[in-house]
Image 1: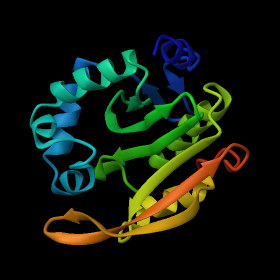
Image 2: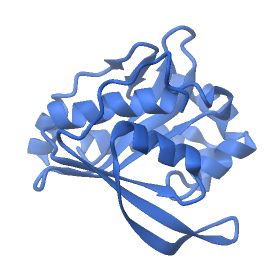
Image 3: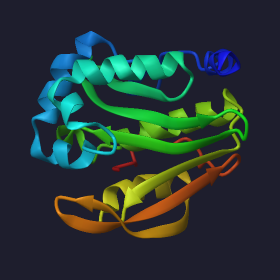
Length: 201
């Protein structure tokens, strides 16, 4: 694990993009996270398995867990902060860092509904995938999206992810069984850096 910590340190934090700052979460994020989690659309998008009910009730638990996981080089989960206002508008992460086989189990992301359709998820995810390949030496990043979630699937498509399979009725959301679509992105397949003015996902 110490080797993993050394390699994870190759990603210089924060990561700055044209509009965003991607950084480790801190306790000043709590207010923005609480406001996001109170929104019905956020709760639907970021509940289990991303965050437990306890973490959504008290974001401090999520922040503490995220920092522990970073210290253990297990996951890299970052707050998405707007550069212009300092508001935390979501999170993006690399879940399940496999240092032996140089792969990431899951790219995860969510954005506050008030900031949807502005290309923020695509922008944040592109820079994190770029860091996974160039800084961490990963050869593969996987991701998943619920079949009905067209917006999330569109983000993955814009990044160059390839649909690799479908887990039928593998997850229950609000009492409904849904299919999970599986995606993969190999080193060299990441699309060119997205145009901020033309990206609306």
